[in-house]
Length: 235
Image 1 (cartoon, rainbow, N blue to C red):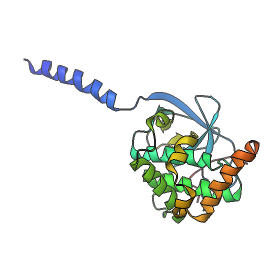
Image 2 (image 1 turned 90 degrees about the horizontal axis):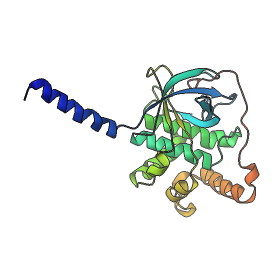
Image 3 (image 1 turned 45 degrees about the vertical axis):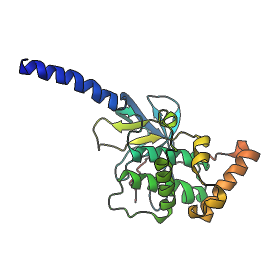
Image 4 (image 1 turned 30 degrees about the horizontal axis):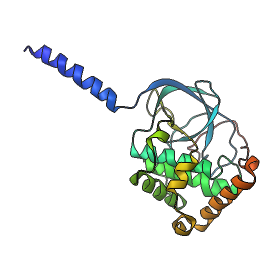
């Protein structure tokens, strides 16, 4: 058999196999909307509001700390589903933040949930740079890693999560959509009696969130407030 024939056959076999192993990718635009006038430890933290391909606003978390993205600016990129353990864990934490009441500009929510969750996602993704790990993020990191290792982040959930990546890697932040899935969270989060490692402050937020959902569902979310430009790298 001629060498170029062998090469052609090998290419014909390998490329489809690689495509099967890789998550599907589609071209997409993202535009951050809303305004952000609060921060956690000097950093503008998620979840943020964003429009994909001009559609309705979605809640998203960014995956890169020390890169900038600006509000009301359209960026070109691609959409995939989570494809690494860190992205799976980030998707889980984004969902958990919504379960706990995010998005909200209330100081208790920013300081106990949104800020630590954002730092936990950046630490899991390895994009902290010179920023020191946040002790308050540790409980969320442990919870996400436990959920992943125990197989409690189902594929049916991950298939509905989008990861947006810029056309030129590193030119702007990557984002992951926050998708609420209460059944997944309630399966993965320890019962209150076994959740002491989460800390009393977070435990109170969980219990308060459950009570709020049962008694006052119309008050479950607080509108966010605003600023003109966005940068998750503000310090």
